[in-house]
Length: 111
Image (cartoon, rainbow, N blue to C red; front, side, top):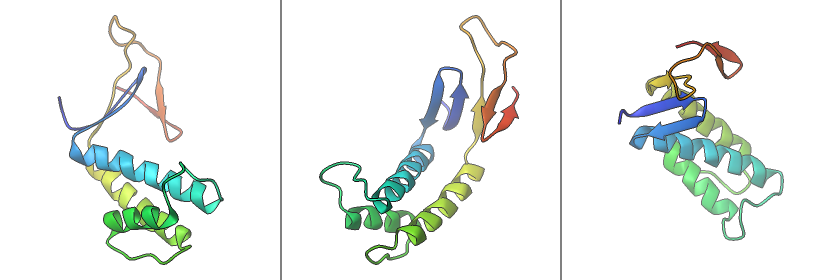
């Protein structure tokens, strides 16, 4: 299977190491946002663990409570990776392609 991101009518696949790390970074950014708002993503994960994971992606150290800075830096990493990873958009209904568009970030993507 090819590495990259494949978007179909049944879901999105992140295949390969880079695409998997991209998905993890997107999830981390969401977790940082929730944690900043006071919602824990689970019982065991602490603020320090989330900030340490952000450090793993960005190479920058974060002090307690620096969620905004960590989210901004992770977002930069995500945008760079999104531009580097190939994205395939396929619309299938099991019988082949149909003419219904798929929207990604509000833009119509055509095959």
